[in-house]
Length: 73
Image (cartoon, rainbow, N blue to C red; front, side, top):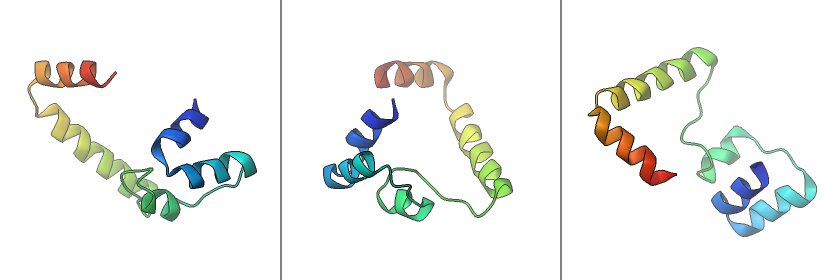
């Protein structure tokens, strides 16, 4: 779950501080730690970015995307 993701994706000290304290972190912190790919000012901008990413993926050859997904699991 979420704890394992924190521990794998964040520097150990930051991950453990968040896990032990339960402290919430901001979107700016998440971006600075490379925990998220992007931060958007509002829902409209988020949806536009998501649609753009989906279009880029959809433009790729389907079998290539399938094999990439399988190799990442």
